[in-house]
Length: 287
Image (cartoon, rainbow, N blue to C red; front, side, top):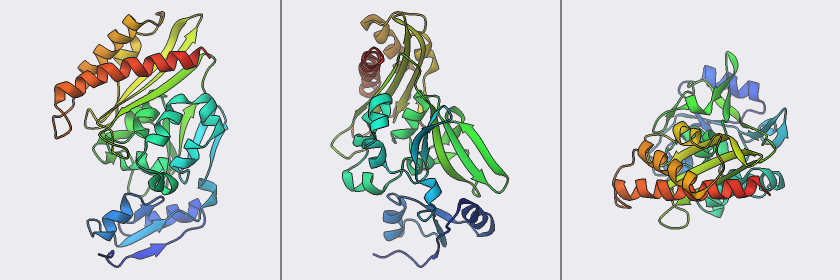
């Protein structure tokens, strides 16, 4: 089946793209297209107008600048996967990138597009939450910055206005003694997560001074678990401490039973993956 007829726009600048979003009737944004194009092909989605961002070179970046790791709207999953900066300093990002779908999708799909889709089974929203990240959006009224903690509202729904687009994601550059990790349980290679956990810790004199823990696929959105992170702060890392954090994370989770496993099983996997992610994060923090 072929896509239904639609009007296609290819802006060359961010300003032109924002103007189109403001002037057109219910436009749909295309960046990587790895979710949109299959839906259009099978006519599950029939947008009348598509605004294609791929000619806007200013949105294609992955860099450390102004105290943040900045991920532009046209940064592909594979760009994160192959980044030396990410490999050296951002363990959870390096863990998550090769776990996204398959190589074909990683070569075209974008990190920002995944966050914009706001699928609670998506990996990047969880990593963003664990790092106290931000979503930068542009619209007719200018730019605004939304903390990741406030961005996700419901499955496939977020704080973006229909006339806005995400220009970049930002997370703070790691502090000295910071490490992070992401662990994901999936049925087979290429699948969405059944359960995922991102963990970030900052150590000073072998004591946790800051932490972040977030979960994938166990609630109606990607969610952070501040209570689990809080029990780590001021403590020396240990297996018992990680177990306690895992228990709190599991209690905070709200998974549903499905063909892949019961809610009890998924809660138990939150316990296990939280402990594993924290252990990896601490190991990386001490390297």
